[in-house]
Length: 399
Image (cartoon, rainbow, N blue to C red):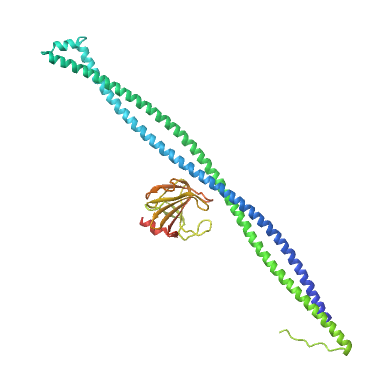
């Protein structure tokens, strides 16, 4: 009986020691879990701030890119107007030369006749009426030529003034374009830095989240072990007390009846190139419908890689119903094509259309970028019917 009590006591002591070790491990794991959770929340806040800053840079980059696009379009229109004015000036200079030649001919004729040209013309006529008529025509011709020359000279002067104003406006637009290009380059650099920051924070967040998950699993396991050890210790203590009570009772019985015999022993029982007439963009297919995106997520559309600034075109006639920045999509544009169909164009560098604009198939609606997060420049395209993503390949090939 004493040996049994000693064994139970040793088991109880060992259980208590194991329980204390488990409690120490649990306390340590909980402290670390608390610290990791606080760090994760801090990174999550930084992540949110960085995402907001990235959105602001993406939107500013989109506005600057569109402003540059508009400036270049205005420059093209001014250059066309200037070319038309120059052609018109050349034509007017030719007409002015012809008028001056005719006037010179009249002047030479007047010089040949002499200073008394009217009198000579009068004497050269057989009839007075004919002479008067000839003199009148002569005066009309001279006056008409002089008026035409004056009118052409005035028009040329006005054209030269207009040409000068257009040239000055072109110089101002050139300066604006250079400033916009410099601003765009600065914004692109800022965007890359913001995207790197977001990517680094994402990596740190995922690491902390994984560590927090692992620590949570450890804490849960230690709590379970501690509960088991405490239950085992409680059972051992109960058994110890029961054994002690039995031993005491046996001792009392032995004192009355003498020694008893011992009890009997009981046996333990790759990139594919896509594009064409109906596609929004020509480039390398980085992820197809139902495939895996570079970040590991599932693709509900197409991810088409192309150089930054490449033109994104509408795949069909429709109306722009959304054109703004959206978390996870960056600068995104959505077109309603009717009959429940909508097309979605995301990750753009710039949006060239606004909500409410009507577009036709093939119209430029955006330019390729990598807004909304890190990664190479690419267009994320989705086709949706009644709000649900559908495979766009067959639809695009039919367009």
